Length: 278
Image 1 (tube, rainbow, N blue to C red):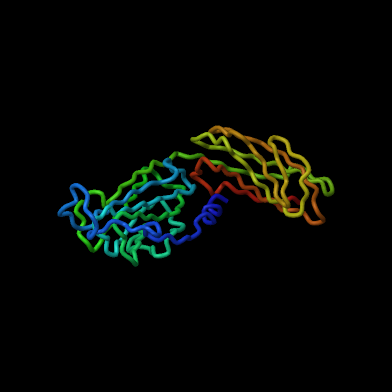
Image 2: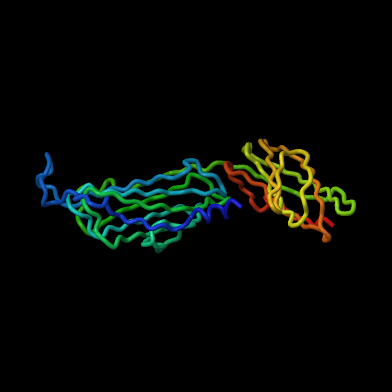
């Protein structure tokens, strides 16, 4: 479910690397300020940030790249190249001109127009931290242009993002009892650590079976789904839930998914369980 939410969040939105409309940025023909006599070229700089600053395994990670041209001249057809670590899967980029680079994890953004002196621009890369990723995650952003840059020391940005150890949530389902259309089901949620999960929740998909009651957690039904808030699940702890449903004519099938929005999971394969309530 976390990956699906992240992919929905990775919608592509074009962003041009130009300054605000209606302003005339300073150029080489305009008045020169103190210390600008004799300056030539375009002083480009790039900055790279990630969100969150502590990456979680199996959770989204966003990189934001900001570029600036301090002038005094326009940057001729600048090229931005961003290289992400192998532990991050790229889901989307919000600039249409950006394309995959020659190597895995690389995004190349060639500008179709010059970047005027005194203007800024930026782009966002949405990714997913692989469950097996180990930190730190090292990313680089490099900005270049066909015009001379008098100060190339800020043309490359390096970013190191640590990765949390995460948790290991798992869910198991079993049928407790059945009497006619009344079905009792038991769900067991475990956290094999090492991190405590304070916002653990389980979602059940019960098709046409009608939810009646639950013990062990606060649960609410939503049109074929039941959501249960588990609260804090410490490392090594187990939580047992017992739910009652009224089945339709056919034996219902149930599917449960346990997740956390704050703590990553090293083993997402056991986050889901299915059962036929015959």
